[in-house]
Amino acid sequence: MTDQPSTPLLNRIAGPADLRALSDLDLGRVADELRTETIHAVSQTGGHLGAGLGVVELTVALHAVFNTPRDKLIWDVSHQCYPHKIITGRRDRMSSIRQKDGLSGFTKRTESPYDPFGAAHSSTSISAALGFAMGRELGADDVGDAIAVIGDGALSGGMAYEALNHAGHLKKRLIVVLNDNEMSIAPPVGAMSSYLSRLYAGAPFQEFKAAAKGAVGLLPPPFQEGARRAKEMLKGMTVGGTLFEELGFSYVGPIDGHDMDQLLQVLRTVKVRATGPILIHAITQKGKGFRPAEGRVDKGHATAKFDVVTGEQKKAPSNAPSYTKVFAQNLIKEAADDDRIVAITAAMPDGTGLNLFAERFPARCFDVGIAEQHGVTFCAGLAASGMKPFCTIYSTFLQRGYDQVVHDVALQNLPVRFAIDRAGLVGADGATHAGSFDIAYLANLPNFTVMAAADEAELCHMVATAARHDSGPIAFRFPRGEGVGCEMPERGTPLEIGKGRIVHEGERIAILSFGARLVEIEQARESLIARGITPTVADARFAKPLDRDLILDLAARHEALITIEEGVVGGFGSHVAHLLAEEGCFDTGLRYRSMVLPDAFIDQAGPRDMYAEAGLNAEDIETRVLSLLDIEVIGKRA
Image 1 (cartoon, one colour):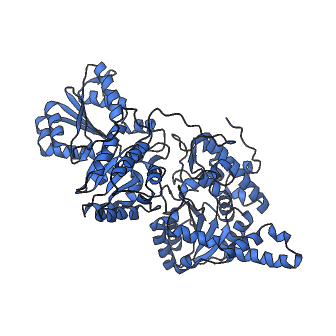
Image 2: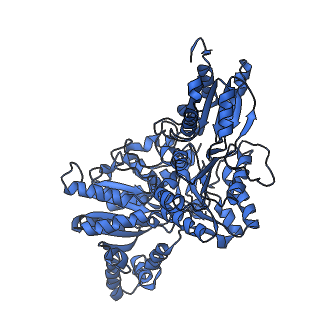
Image 3: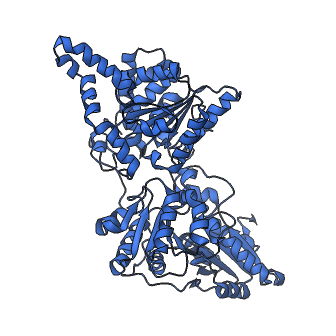
C-alpha cells in the first residue's frame, strides 16, 4: 500500500466554498496537492487517470470562481471528474470509485448536488448546460451560471455543434470551456483537431506565450512593460476564434490551462462581464504531472492499479485471450484474403482492437472520431460502393447511431457488418457503458441478421460469417474481457445463417442460450446433474433469423424451455416466445421462461456481482430450472 501523500492545504478543503477563502497563491498549492491526491487515489483503485490530471487547475479555478452547486458545472466526458469529486466532499470515498456500492467513475446526479448532469457518453455538455441556462432565464429556482467543460475529444461529436449553433442563436449567457488536450482516448482525428492545433501552434501565440512566462524577467526594463501588456492581451485575444464567433460565441483564448493565474483572471473577468454565450479555449496536457502517464500513447487514459513511482500497472495474468483481441486477429486474417474488407471505429482503436488492424492495413482502417452517427452512415456508403465495412463500436455507443442504423443501413439493406464489443454487463464503468439493449434494438429491424458469440471460438466463426455475408446488414456481439479458454480454430468457418447447435442432449427441460452466458449454463447443468436432472443445452447463435426447426424441436421434446441472454426484455427471448405462441406450443402445455437483464440500470461492480444482481449466474439458472420443474429448493418452493 502506498503511503498517503502529504496534502496539508487540501486537508482543509471540505467543499468548494473553502476554496473561495484562499489566496490565489494557495489555490495553486491546492492544485498541486490535488494532482498528487488524484494520482494516489487512482493508484489504489484503477480507473481514469490522464483526463483528470489534465484538468486539475481548471477544477480548482472553476470551483473557486463560480458558486457551485448553484452554478451548474458539467464535465464532458466526465471521466475528467476525479479531481472534482475529491474537492466536492467525496475525498473519503475515492477508494470506492468504480467499485460495487461505491462512487461512479463519472458524474452522477444521485451522487452529489455538485453533479448536476451525468455525462459518461461524450458531446452532451453544451446541450445540457444550455438547458440549465434557459431554465434560469425562465425562472427555474436555484440555477445560476451554466458552465460546460468539454474536452478529451468530445468536440468531435456532432451534437456539440448542434448545441453551439442553438446557443449562438439564443444569445443567452452560457459559459463553455474547451479543454483542448489534443486527445480523446486515442489521438484525435479530423479537421476540427487540425483547426484547434493551428490556433495555438502559430508564431503569434507562441511569442505571446513566451512573453507570458519567465522570459519577461529576462527582457531589458524598457521592454518588460510591453511584454506584460502582451501577456494581458493573450488572455483576451481572439486569434483564430472565427469559427466559434461565427456560431455566435465570444471567444477567449487560447490560454494555458495549467497557469492558475491566467485561469483565475480569465474566469473572473468572464463571470463579471459575460452577457451572451462565451467560449474559453484552454490548452491542457492529458496526464499532466505524472511522467508514466505523460509518456504513454493514451496519456494514461484508463489504468489498472499501479505503482505511483514507476507507473507499473498491477494486472492479473490471463489464461485466455480477450474477445477483443480474438476479433481483431480474425478480422486481420479475413482482410488478408479480401481487400474489400475495411474497418471503422469511433475514437476507440485500442478498445476495439482495430489498432492491430491499422498496423497491418493502415489504408483500410478509419477512425471517425467521437461521431457514431457519421461512422454508421460512412459504413453504409462504403457498403453501397461495394466495400465490406466492419463497423466496430461498443454496444453502448452504437445506441448513439441508431437512427442511422435504421434509416441508412437496414432500410436500404446494405451489407454493413456490425462488430459489437462490450456486449452485456461491463463491470466498473457501470450502467452508462453496459451493452444491454443491442439485441432488442437490432433484432426488431427488417433485413438484419443478429448473432452472439458463446465463446471465443464461436467469435472466430462469426467474423468469418460476417465477412462473407453480402445480402444485408449483419451484427455479432461479444463481451468484454477474457474468453473462456476453449480450444481455438486456426481459422473461423462461416456458419449457416439462422442455424443453432445442440451442445448437450438431455431430457425434461431445455436451456436455449444466446451469447456468452453459455459457460454459466454449463456450470448450472453440472449442479443439476448431481440432483438427477439432465437438461438439454443448445446455443442459438442467431437471434435473427431464429432457428425455427431447433426451437420447435426443443419445445416438442421437452416439458419446459428456458431462454437466456445478456440483454433486456424485447430481445431474443421475446422473439422465441412469439414464435412459440404463433406455432401453438403453449396450447399444448409447454412451460416457458425467459431469463433477461432486469428492468433497471445496474450500478458498477465486478461483472460477477452485476450478473448476480441481474440473476444470470449459474446458481440463478439452476434455481430457475428447479422452480420451473416444481422441485423444492432448500426446503421450499423456488
